[in-house]
Length: 332
Image (cartoon, rainbow, N blue to C red; front, side, top):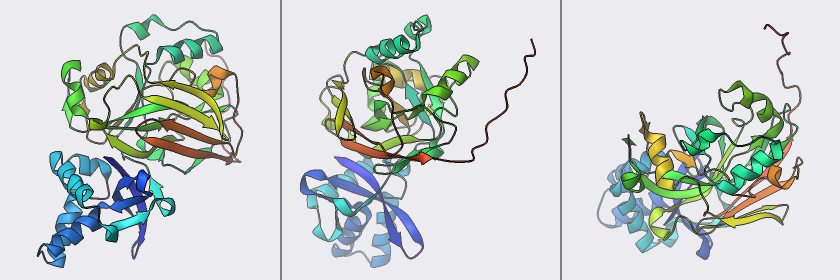
């Protein structure tokens, strides 16, 4: 199944609705509405049908995933009926981020990108990459959806995209091992790790991880494909286009660390929560930096992943009047 989130205008403003996505039919099905109609036709009162439909399909994808098999079974029942009364034309919907994670994690697993990135910046990869599956944590508050404009803070001169898979966690768990980590994977979405390369070069030597070079935006969408639809996690086709021109093409193979190892490592000493998203790291050739190319305001970036779909975003104009700290005098 393909499951997503859209915004629907109601009497109290814009609210989120979970939807079953049927791209081959050009429509989505409002899961809450479909379940309410089914319950009402089965004899439930309108009030009771509303209560149960809301419990099964809340506004939060993370909250829905936390229901476990109950959520999936309810979604499958909607999929089996595919009620026309709950359908919405796919071209008319306003997308929200496919998940609302408690925290964003982004890994570094593709060998091609590790080599290509370090060749461009003129540094050899650290041997630590061979010791543990590296990742960083970002804010969930700047996650953006399919078709959303990418904010361009005025302090950024060298903007970049990064073509990644987003592993969506399905169960709470900590201290996992690779042999059972797959059981905690709900599905896969597309993840665009937007990057300010000029600011990244300043931040990373501080050795405290990325901050302003990453946290202005993370693209997650357009929807989630449940994990049962992927036969081989190392054979997923991936492509990036800028203004309609293909800039990178490959697949999910050639990783230094497996999906299961990345999930297990992320869980050590802490809890993964339902709906959390872990970026796979960038596919080799999946960033403009590796190609020696640069992006401009107004450029449209499309990340296409087999079995999921296409995450499309346009870069906005640089935001003016952004404060930036004044460099201090040396103290050593």
